[in-house]
Length: 354
Ligand code: G6P
View 1 (cartoon, rainbow, N blue to C red):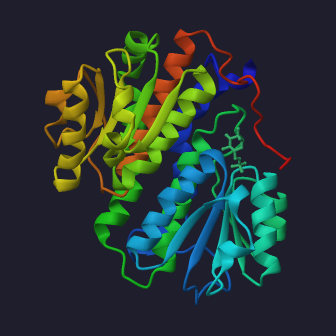
View 2 (cartoon, rainbow, N blue to C red):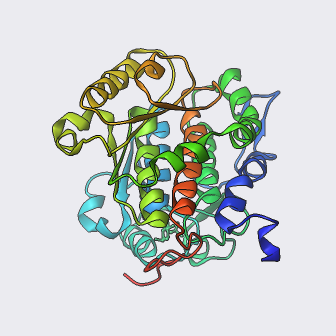
């Protein structure tokens, strides 16, 4: 218990360690004056395409990272590691990036070995120095989150997001705007602000008995919608699904009832945000409660029963802040239901069998 520093669970402690973890991840890598990112990786200068392979929460970080790489002009695709095979490597040989906090997940190691056997260069994005992934790959990018005890990944996910964000900036030849650098450097304090002011506990108390939970987000927020649902099902044992907001009308809407809350991540005030607001309206009109995770810039609050606020930031970083609210929501729902949060039934921190 001493290791929990006064928190009831390691998971809550690790959620609160995120500002520090992110500071460590960025330290000496982002130069605010020169507006450069330096990651000390060798032999990756002529990368023309990237495959990211990962499992579970790390797969969601990989989805986030792949989008940022594509936005910087680098073709990037994400694969669930257990589905990666020789056929996935058809065409030009990519750099294959294994995203794995432990560095020991059998499916991810298997995918990286498949890539190496086909002549691809490999990079491990991992939290664990000396792990199998770090040793077997050509290069390793450490996410520096510090040890994570809770089975459900929290701070390692945030650190993977930021390490992959830095990687996309480092790899691309486009110059990095000072706005992006400033936003990255402000992020740890903004995560702290979310932790200090979150209303997730009272929202969780109101909805813990719901029959199912749906999480939606669009573009940058789609990966955290998936992650929000995964986190909730892992630790609460409740049914939760996450998907792209636009997919609501292609099936999930049929499941919407007055005891199936929709958790919608909506930031900014552009047409992308407005499309998600339209999806929210459709759900609200069918009687389901809506919990909006928002920076307050769109009118989503008008259609929401509850709001979980996040500070304004660059659109590419808003998912990191939104995810902190989703982590807290899951944590408090599981706490309300009395689940063994740090050690959910049937799950392991690191899955070393295929
Ligand atoms: C297990 C853990 C998850 C984790 C996944 C991938 O399923 O319970 O929290 O996301 O493995 O782990 P890795 O170490 O490869 O990131």
